Length: 400
Image (cartoon, rainbow, N blue to C red; front, side, top):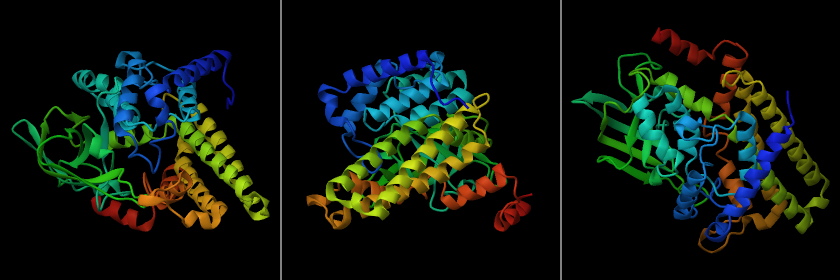
């Protein structure tokens, strides 16, 4: 496992740091530290402009091949970029879903025409995407998707509902997992469709969170149409495409996420020093445990990335989401205990402090993107080779 970067890579780090420092001035200075978890509603127009600046300077899609509009950065260079981006407290990315999820999936499965149509606007920071996976009865159990699409007269006609759709209110496009063959088993008969969000028949309803903001939404599809060629991968073969998208989600940006966690931990430590909570031995021990947990998280991620072969994440990566989600939720609890009674006081118009947002938003970490319970099943069955849990085994027998 290589835990150090080469001289050339450190030179790349200095160039990224210098560019970010110069770019985050003037109109973008106020965006520092805004737009992260629990704060995604902040400065949407300013962050859209920031995405265009990233695109114009070829920093929007650093890991994409140059032929696809990216910078062609190596794995280590991608890690460095995401680390420096978090260290600079640059604004939360509106283009994340397009860059990190949809883009690599199009590069892997798309036709030449699809690559030419969809990749350049993402790389330029001009088009934004959302993810149409979860439904009221198909969250962690994604194979239970019921949204249907039927091919009629050269167009897909879509009916159904998606939920927990992050940034749907400002997205231009959505990749939607639909059931296109209702008679097929659950994991089959699904297709991965690309749908314009301003199509007639789409209704977006905001879901208010504990933070008082509405970062995600319900999305309703009522006879929504998208061209027949807007299916990514084979018809009825969307499960494999969807799983590839989820694998990309566990990639190099996780180290940048950990630096954001480090920023939050530093704020908790500063608060403990300021109000005297750091004198409490129990609080000091919890802070030390949080610091050590973050170091373990980083070493584990570096190990996982260094073991990648042919771009495939190995089974070690299956532990990552369970670990960071639990750690981050516990950090939110620690923040509230450090603040003490102050944690219960909010400003006018329900204005939360960053640590209050941390606590409230991190309550969802162990649920979204695969609940802790589902993550444990994945680790047991796919990484360790254990038998499926009884209900899943019964379902598989019925489908066969």
